[in-house]
Image 1: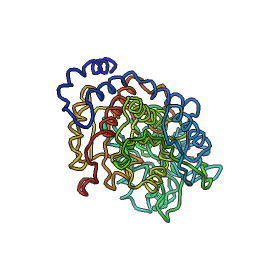
Image 2 (image 1 turned 90 degrees about the vertical axis):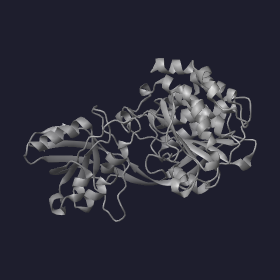
Image 3 (image 1 turned 60 degrees about the horizontal axis):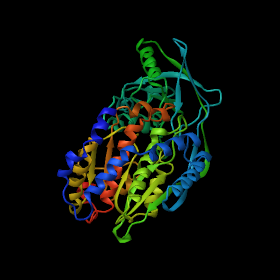
Image 4 (image 1 turned 30 degrees about the horizontal axis):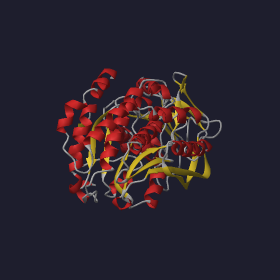
Amino acid sequence: MKKHLATAAALPFLFSAAVPALAQYDAAKVEKLRDAALKDDVAWDITEGLTTEIGPRPAGSPAEARARDWAVSKLKKLGFSNVRVETFDMPVWERGEERAEIVAPFPQKLVLTALGNSGATPMDGITAEVIGFDSLADLEAASDADVRGKIVFVSHGMVPTQDGSGYGYFGGARRQGPTVASRKGAAAIVIRSIGTDHHRNPHTGVQRFADGVAPIPAAALAIPDAEQLQRILKRGKPVTMKLTLTPRDIGTHQSGNVIAEVPGRDPKLGVVLAACHLDSWDLGTGAIDDATGCGIVTAAAKRVMDGGDKPLRTIRVAWFGAEEVGLFGGIDYLRKHPKDHAVIAESDFGADRIWRFDSKLNATAQPIVRDLGALLAPLGITQGFTDRASGSDIGPLSASGVPTIELQQDGTRYFDLHHTPDDTLDKVDPEQLRQNVAAWTTMLAVTANAKVEFGPVAADQQ
C-alpha cells in the first residue's frame, strides 16, 4: 500500500493533460494542493489528540461534552471562522454489567456486550433455554409458541466487502431483531456480532424497540463465542444460558454539533458541507469511527483555506454529535439548516484509502464529475455511480435532494474494528489517512470554486 501511494504521488504530471482547462478554477493549483496533502499531518494530529486527550465519547456523556470543547479550541487554533456549537437534547442510555454463560449442557462463559437501548435483566440475571436461528428471516417465520420465554440467538456470518455493502442486510439482526424477538415473547436476544473479524471482541451498535414493544435484554456475542454457541446447539441437546445485563436509561442530556467555516466570496452560492461525527461508542477510543473522519475533512478544508485564494463558496466543517445512537446530530442540523447547501459530503467509514467516488448531482453540475475523475485519478481513485451518494448524518439532507458526493473508502477491514474495543489509534495507517486528505482537498477545492449551478437533484435520483 505504501508503494502504491508513493507511486501515485509521483504521477500527477502524467495525468495533468487529461484535466480540462477550467474557467472557474485553476486546475494546476488544485493539483498542487492535492499533491501537497499527501504530506499532511493535521488529520493525524486531530485523530491522535481526540483519541488520546478525550478517548471514548459516548453521545450525551460528559466525555462528549469535553470533546466539543476540545474541538472548538482545535478549530479556532487552526484558523477557522464562525466556530460554534449548536446544542440539542437527547435521551441517553448507559451500559451496565454484562455477563453470559452456558449453564448446560457444556458449562462455560461467553463474551458479549449489550446493544444500544437494550432492556435490563434483574441484577442477578435470567436463566432460560436458548433457541437458535440462522437468520433474522428465520426468527420472523418462527411461531410465538416456540420463542416465548426463551433466549433467542440469531447467527449469520457477515463477510468483508470493499464497499461495506453487507452491513445493510446483516445489520438487520441487530436493528430489528430485538423488536421481533420481544413481540414473540422472548425473554432476551443475543446475536452474532455484526462484524467480519474473529477476535474475541463483541461489536455493539444501536437498536431501537418499535413503538409499543416492551424492551428486552439484547446483546451481541463476540464472533468466536457465537460460533461456539452454534456448535453447542448443533449437538442437539437443550442449551441453557444465564444472562446478566444491567443497562439503564438516565434521562435527557445535551449533545451538540461543532461547526466551523472557511468563508467564501459569494454567500448566495450556498455552502459546501464537509461532515464527520464527533461521538463514538464506549468500548474503544473511536479512532476509525470517526475521529479519522473529523481529521480528514478538517485537514482538507484547512488546506483549501491556506491555499492562497478565498474560495467562491463557503466551506462548512461539521463535527456532528450523537450519530452512533440515532443520527440525532444530523437530524438537528437538517432542522436548523435545511436550505444552506450547494453540495454535501461526509467521511464516516474509517481511514483506509479512497478507491472510488460516487455522486448525485443535478444536470448542470455534471461537469464536476468529469473534472473530479481526472483530478482524482493520480490518487488511484476511479469514478463510480453518478446517480447515488449519501452518508450517515447527511443522509436526510441527501434524501431531500441536496447534491451529494461520496468519497468511498476501502471498507475491507472496517467491520473487523467497527464498534469494538479494537477501534483504537494503532489501527490507523498514516499514509492512507493522507491519501484521504488529498482526495478531500481536491473535491473541496473543485466544488467550492466551480461556477456551476448546484441545484436540487431530480426526484428519480433521490
